[in-house]
Amino acid sequence: TNLYIKNLDPEVTSYDLFKRFRAYGKIISARVMKDTVTGISKGYGFVSFTHMDEANDALQNMNGALLNSKNIIVT
Image (cartoon, rainbow, N blue to C red):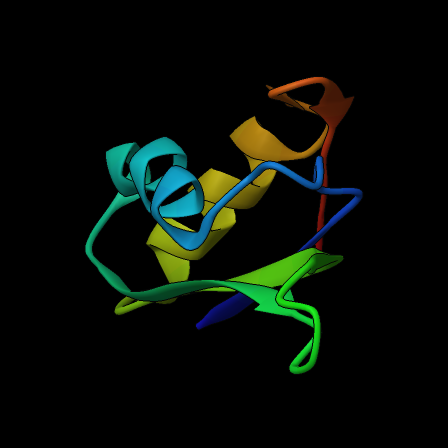
């Protein structure tokens, strides 16, 4: 089950997403999308969980959470 995370601080890395979301279950992948030329974050990413209930738990707890300097939006 994939979650879309937006409003990411430009300094947030894929590993940062992994660290913040792993408390909610087993993560298959966590990725911040970056510009292919500049390598700069596009401000959004994805976290994929093995089970839907884990993803729903993460959604309920992380939507609006502060990550670095911004409140993230999780859908």
